[in-house]
Length: 138
Image (tube, helix red, strand yellow):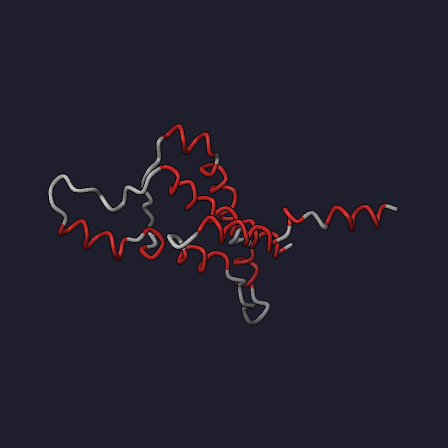
């Protein structure tokens, strides 16, 4: 009986990596494909059983919990977050936005200002992909 219950509970589609990837894909849309492609791809196995393999096993946890703090819609909405700025230039559009900033006319829109809904979508992609990675490890 316990085994059957565990099997039924494990079929919860919300806790499967593919369900999180599907939600991330929807949130990514066309705007955040680079972020989605980098974070949601299934990691390839790394060779050897060295100590470094153990050290990198915890790496997916670097993203999941911190992103959940900012993915709280109330926090992001109340803060009025409306930009995406990252140290990953492919993720925040800097390769396109920086040249636009250099040539924009005074008073024209800042290309980094994407709006609150878009900022929340960006964080949703990061959260769902990180959660999928964690589930794959377990």
